[in-house]
Length: 190
Image (spheres, rainbow, N blue to C red):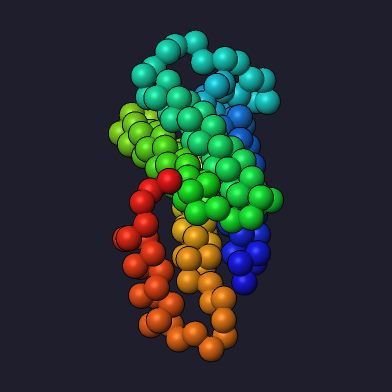
């Protein structure tokens, strides 16, 4: 069960990282009609009739969304590396917890980025363009958030399983729980 949880957390983390990278780098966060042509926009550039151009104006919400998405990618990558190193070296509680925290932070950073983008898009672009919608890059960002939170939760479950692992099948749960709690409370931090 220990390796199954670690594998599930790793799979969710790697999937979240791939989706965060794809979402951040592609140009389909929003699609709209511009002068009768289909146009799309991402964080880095916009495309009209399959001709893409860099954003010509610097708007604070694009910069904030870009920054938070890049930080989410870095945090997710850090969480995966910490999780894999704990998995390879035997699940050490400290590395497992740090991996989970990094993955949860990644989810919050991506959530913040998408919340900023959503708010500005609905209030600004929603009034400017009549026929617009969020597109697949944006949706992948939301899926990545869910996977990042799921991956961040798995290491904590993994640490709990490691904490309550029963060395002797005849040991009762109450005895094991009290033994582990007393060992944590009574032993000095290393």
